[in-house]
Amino acid sequence: MRLATFEDKNNLHWGFVFPHPETKEDWIVEPQKVQKKIEWYISTKTNPFLYVPSFFPKQEWPKTLRKFLEEGDEAMYTLQQLETFALHFMEQTDAFILLECAYRAQDVKLCAPIPSPRLLLGIVGNNPAFIRNHLNTPHVNLVPQGHLRHQCTALGANEPIVCAPMPNFFWAYNVELGIVIGKKAKNVPIEEAMDYVAGYTNVIDSVGNPYLQAYPEITKLKDIYSVLAYDWAGKAADASCPIGPYLVTKDEIGHPYNLSTINKMNGLLRDRANTCSMLVGIERAIAYYSSFMTLQPGDVLHMGASGKDGLNIERKHKHDTDIDVLECEIEKLGTLHSPIVYKDIDWRDSNDESKALHVSATARQLIKNDACKLDAASQWNLSTVRNYAAAYGNYKNVKEVQGIECADIGRYFWVPPSALGKEDLEEFTFEEGYDLEISIELAFVVSRIAKEITEKDASNHILGFIPLLSLTNNRLRDALISPSLIREPAIVSLYKRWNDGCAIVSGKPTAITGNEEGSITLTLSVNGTQTLNLNTANYVHLSAHYMEIITKYSTLLPGDVISLGQLGETYILPAEKLCQGKHSLMMTATGLPDIKVLL
Image 1 (cartoon, one colour):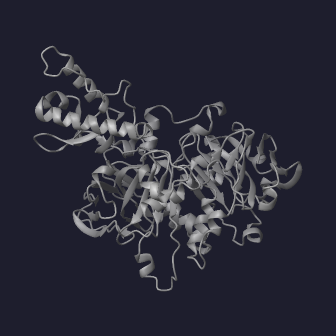
Image 2 (cartoon, rainbow, N blue to C red):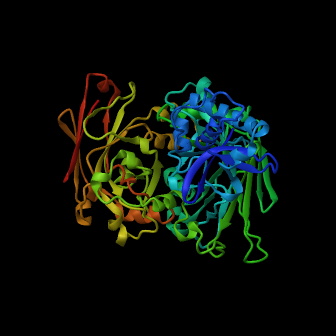
């Protein structure tokens, strides 16, 4: 099946895609509407049917495609039966009445199949050319090296990629095979991983380097974490990651490692390759990521470039009115068209929603639903967090502790929101055989949609502050084979913050003044003994700086959490002690709720 999410009259719908009986163009029908139409037909006195098909569900169909995927394999099988029945009904009985409840795909706005994916994870360096063409590389670990995008990066078919303004234009792209997770996945064996795939879609991995151009001083920082932070910040620019046009279920695809990939621009071929060009396959990626975090239905993994990595977008206009369009296709998945908007050539009408409301489809939907802010701290909880980012190396003695330089421009990485743990007292399960690294941090919560916020205006977009207790270990790093690529240990060290519930927060956001933010004392006690006593005066950058840096090119949404990162030294609880009974942790922060954890 081909499944789609689309917008009609400001409302989101989803359904299966079928060719019009005569024109063969794509139409989309909602399961709920087609079932009701068939039931009505059967209820008429002169119809030839004597029964309603037994597979028709008694309850209503889910309202979104993500909710449908959460229903599991049985729901998918039922939808396949409904699609087959509906197509035969049109062929043999009455096509006209079903077309009454269908939408012509060309007449509606196609969204990403899963709008605003909870997890949009792109794998880098996943191509033999990275090894074949780098002669000094002795070997590579078969570990997926992934970066996260936040929700406002996702686009649907035919929506414009809005290139962030920069003095010297640079933008590049690739089409990549997108994997849509079909059911909750945790600790999945490699041989069972494909059971957790709902289907596939095209993903255009587009990227510019706006941060490097806006802040040239950051190019002086050569440590791998700085390189990754500023490079990946460009990948997370708003409206940069088209997905679609459809989710094609895996039964339609068969062999996912033998699909042609074609990149075009303005009808001209830029690159062609095949999905067999993967170092790390789908099964290994799902097994690996699910070993430390839970994958959920609707999560999207895109598997990296199959051919040349990073096709530069060449501006070869004959006229200022010309529109550049990327055309990206993977065999059996259809073609994803994405027009490009430049700073100096903006062809959009003034009433185009991507110009009038917001470039991000996610932000536009919140605006339309009057959900663009949280009015009170009581409205916030972990379920409202759409995006979570954590600062890196943001404390004054970072060179002594971690061996990297302080940065004039804050470094940060996006982290899965599922890494934020439950509030109040909880029992945290640790992994035996590994030291537990504990850091104490201050985080803030965003109150409203925030884009291009200056430090001066940052406080108007902050709901309040929360304490954060981070519990991590180096299991993934220790599993690497050495010598490794310099990027590999750095990326897996970042993954340790991706574990489910490893960043524990407590209470509701508390409003504090700018002066107070820079003078909060944070302490950690282990089994009643104080082990860390730090002050936020040790942070290099505070919330206002990170609000300005992040929102320069990325939109933050109400409820989002930004951690100012590790405040200084961490406390190590050795593996041998961890196994000797239970341990109690308590974090306190001046004027904020305590955090208590039982290991």
